[in-house]
Length: 535
Image 1 (cartoon, helix red, strand yellow):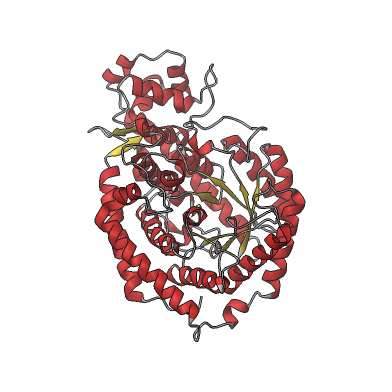
Image 2 (tube, one colour; image 1 turned 30 degrees about the horizontal axis):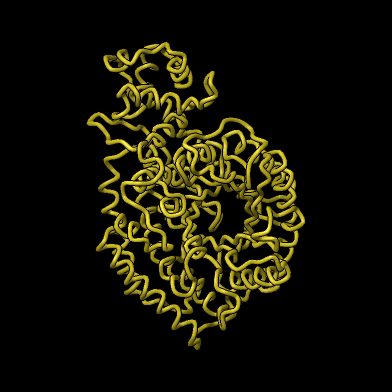
């Protein structure tokens, strides 16, 4: 990406310094916490799955049992490890023994068996499976020619995973490069992960490990047919963020929605719960070499894109720092932004270009996720198609990486298969006809775009200074992001947060950040360059 608007490097450096200080304060608080979801994710990574006789997911049942019997403060790993070591069973069998009532709490609290080595063995086996998925992805990408961005990102969401497969394969054959299976409405507020293949959903399909497995298999088959790798995306935000991240890592997903503060603002999930969960979930994403997508684009669905654009940039700086602290590389950070100017605004397209170009230059190594217009879409499908075309034009002109396709029926109904076909066809037409435009044009003499870029960066810097003063928690309480206020002590899932005890142990804390067992050359980026990178 050639420098065109040249955001002030001193201001960018100061913004990153402020973001680092903001994130440090948050991590000081959440580092002493764990959540029921983190512990359930540990169980899933150890291989625990299924449901009990009442239909409750076994990871939920086991963690609830440990919590009810005051055994959770040291983590679920010691609990399950003592049963593994004492009875020479697998984590799955140990969990089933708890569900069947065969383990007394007193046994766990008094057990002196060497449980750590037992649980570590299964943890390393799981890490090996995830590392194998990284190798597989790298080999499959390496077998095909390098594709040009922007990558066309297409959503499917019928509610029925088997129907989703049909629509996903059709979209891939039409030219989509990333298939995102949007989740069923409000799944982010479920404090459990449904089990098995699902055929009923509302506005989307439930994220389950079996659904991940079914879609991954289908896209691999289609990719082999087409001679290119089809990337799979799903959502791990919400109350089960770490669990779904674990499932995605185990089933070789390539992209996952994972934002540090989206759930707080738009789903009213407790701050400590969300920020604790995001840290562990991003460690999983980092190790699995999954590209994350963040949710700053959503700010502009509730706030004005002209006056509040700086909040998006400020949040991108914060999300970037949270990601780096969790072990993600810059080319795994699909920071979100959106094309949401009022289409009746004079020179609105120039303001959109300025925002997109500024983000592209400030985060040159990151595969930014560019979102289509939604806020000002109406029942006029013809005007909507023009808005989406302008969006694609902006994406090409500014060298965006992940391009979420706009649909002409946006805000009317869940898109039909032919709606996706038209969206893909239109985007391919614009991208192909203007592929080199990004390198051909210059904004050197632009007045409107340069002034806009400078203002957004300056306002973002001023906002980050305020966030540093208030702290991130205080900022969210004041409703500075997206105009939505959230109380520090409120929100869903608060009761699922607990203080770590002196003996707390999570085997994956160390394994996921290890560079010795699984060296850097395995970390092949699936989106940004398709080649090995140790950066």
